[in-house]
Length: 117
Image (cartoon, rainbow, N blue to C red):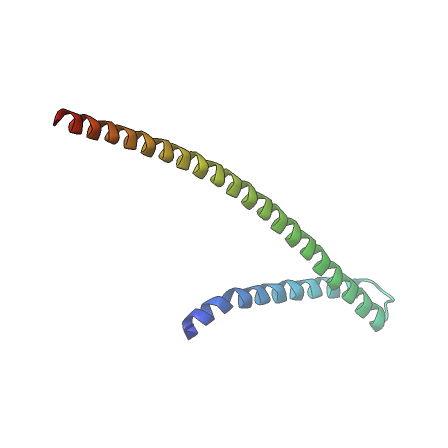
């Protein structure tokens, strides 16, 4: 595998990492903004709230991603089943057509051989 191919394979991973980091950065900014508005919290409490919120956002994002992946898998399975049915019908039609053509050709050959005697 060339370096170009390896780089092309790694780009989606890098893109995913950067997207996740941007999302986590935005999450941290939101929770920091919330923590500064709530009076009377110690630094440890702010940190605990921040950790909980980031973990919760990751959990929700994972749930959404899993749900989307399940739906896509279901749709792909349904499409594959439809494709198999269409291919079966096409193959059956092709087999019947080839059998009829073979029969017709055999009849023509029999007629030709029969008329030459």
